[in-house]
Length: 440
Ligand SMILES: *Cc1c(COP(=O)(O)O)cnc(C)c1O
Image (cartoon, rainbow, N blue to C red; front, side):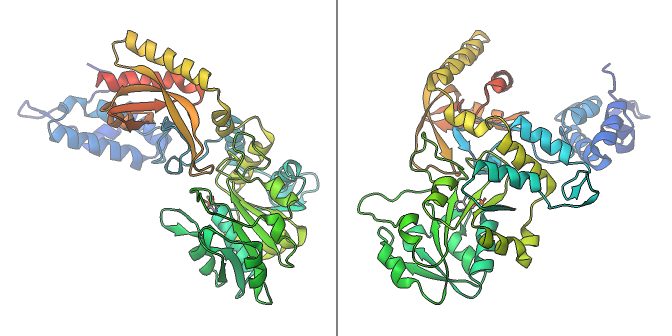
């Protein structure tokens, strides 16, 4: 008999399903309750009992089934290998953190000096070292502030710089971010009025100039980060608007701090500030490759107005976010950067190696060329040459339900596991997950 299996023999000699309290006393489950919490373990036990009652597993296997179903942590979030080919997948939490950032988060999760100067014993500026790291990476910015996400950065700019006043914005930049959230509606919700200029495809500097006046809080330039307009188009550059006498706020979205040659059309904070933007807003968990947060960079007086606004307190980030952001800024290349810069031939070699090993084990797997994308984080339309392990289509569901879960994409009747977003050190885990899916 398995160590830990809990057979309960009823008086009539039939094997019955063990009671919940008996199962919770089983050594492996009792240990797990100490680690994960009793509620989490009890849920696994109850689910296993239900399976036994339904005849899916024998009564004697309830404890084993409960142990097998225990989550890795007390959180319902499960680890996923992103093999979709989308580098920054919104539904998978966008940018995965670097090891440096994860270690910083783990350390900051305890008591830490986020708002205390240990040298003097006095209160200190919250997140000062993360802000210093931002200043070092973007010397063009006089000041920086960090909020909960990109949307929060926009909200704070609107309430601090355009309360009851107008935000001048091109009709070609009225962007829906995703999941029904629209930047114009977000801004209108702050009480600011939108002054729309130009048309969907064409907006000139003169359109802005004609709209700017007494009522203007600022001009907002929004990077169309998830769509492209082609053909008969015209937009106004930040440089063409910087001299109109009102602040220009550039929402670059992706969080690139400096120009990235692989993504020539993607705006970056340094270039925008050099071009004359007074403030730049961006997300931390897109191409910057860090935690979810929003960055505000730019002129000292404007950043201070945002940081000193009463709503700033409601939008501020936690110590773990500050730790992850700083480690992302100071640390080695992020997983997002690694994925973006991965060499197509090297990706193909990895795919060949994984597929060959799987074929040796009798799995129908082949290496194929593939096309990856940056994703919700920016660079719409940019195709990144990639390589994938192609397996039968019906593996997709099994892989998704496995542990760790693997998300691929189904294309032309095959399940493709694109290696560009997968860190090379996870190749072994990916192959093992495919083997487990094949065995089921
Ligand atoms: C993603 C994005 C946002 C929203 O940022 P969140 O961090 O998701 O709140 C705003 N503007 C642009 C241009 C974006 O690309």
